Length: 139
Image 1 (cartoon, one colour):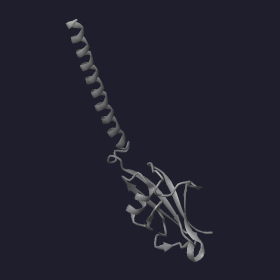
Image 2: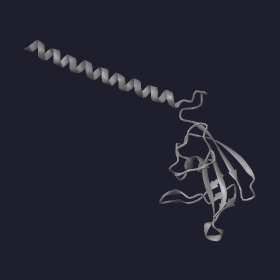
Image 3: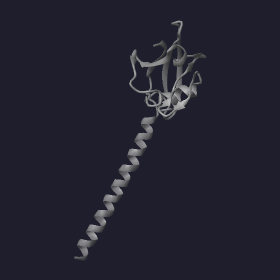
Image 4: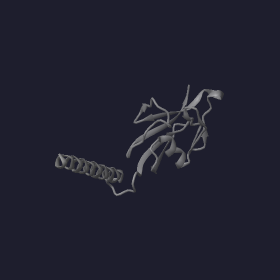
C-alpha cells in the first residue's frame, strides 16, 4: 500500500511538471509569433490608411504601430482628431479637414479595401498589411 501511495504522488508530481513545461513552452511560442517574420519588433505591424478628402484627392499614410485597434493607431499617427465618446473614437478631423454632420451632414466614412466597416475605429482590430480608407462623405 505504501508503494502505491508513493507511485501516485510521483505520478502527480510528474504530471504537474509536464503541464508546467508545456505552459512555459507555449508562452515562449506566442512571444516568438509576435515578432514579425520581417524581423520587426515584437507586436509591431504596418498598415496603410488612404485618406480621400472633400476634393476627391487621395493621400496615403503608412502607420507602423504596436496598437491592436485602429483608433489607437490613428491617434498615435497624429493625422486624425476627434472625441472619444461612449462608443469610441468619433473621427471629426482628418489631415486638418473637419467633417461636421450638424453643419452639412458630412462625416468621415471608414472602410477597408473598399467595403464599409460594420465596426467603429475603436472596435476595429488591425493586422500587418491591412489597408483602410477614410473618405469625406456628405449624407
